[in-house]
Image (cartoon, rainbow, N blue to C red; front, side, top):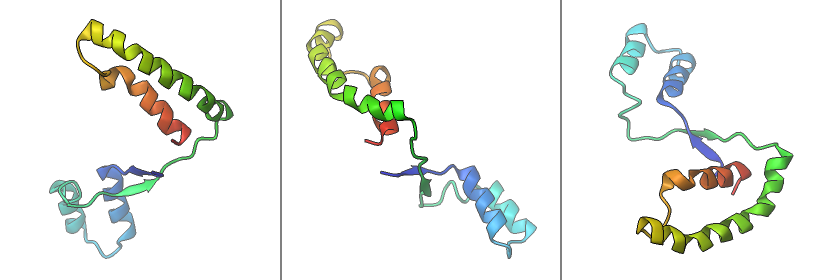
Length: 102
């Protein structure tokens, strides 16, 4: 997915800057009542593309790291008693995949 969620603050700023017909009172209502936050919509913008050559070349190492993680699962089960890694412990792998565009 080439999109990322936009913060409510950016959406508020965009509404205030691009809809010229809004009065000062309407702008305050949008901000104070947090209309964007409680709206049933989600707003997205395009992600910035990775230009780092080293990061793109690191894709070559991903299968090896994945295999090492799979081999480590039984040891993790013996030590912790759960089959699988906690997301906090393996978040770096997920971030790496996203940065590489996978």
